[in-house]
Length: 248
Image 1 (cartoon, rainbow, N blue to C red):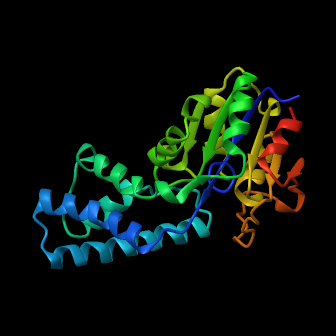
Image 2 (tube, helix red, strand yellow):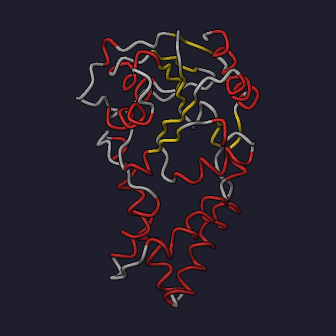
């Protein structure tokens, strides 16, 4: 039986809803505050910056679609946009603003189904829990978990934004095993919503996998050459997160 469980975050534990225009404007306003206070940006400067930032976001989106496995987190994106305007910024200056920028999304990141009760039950059973996820900003994950009093339930939270590598690259899963040295991959159950990002990467390293299909995952992505998807199958197919309790 499994000795530990690792989860994807978005569309597995939490639903990521589409942001409305007021939320998007609040996010922009945080960056505007920083740029006006620090660099005295004019309205024209701001317009140029957001055009550059939009271009960088498109590059990140294309990289993700092409499965290059490299993560450009939000800090990277802002720095690249400003670099096009010949500005160099210090990470420690902008990170608090990026935290505030992503905090504007919190109302659109909601626990799926019975996520809260399931995680609490697993925690009470003293089953080690972790999160391994693709996300452009690590701290938004911890903010969401803390908001629902779940942060302390997880031994490890590994995000693509914190290590610069995206699933299904083996590197991000190996990071988990490095942290969980007391377990082998065969003793870990990985739960996710994507056959491409979750099942393929975890299966390739010998983990058991559960594919959550309460929301239909997008399987139209281009197949990475690094994996043979013809043989990729989840060990378990579940419709609700509650089903995990029947697998332990």
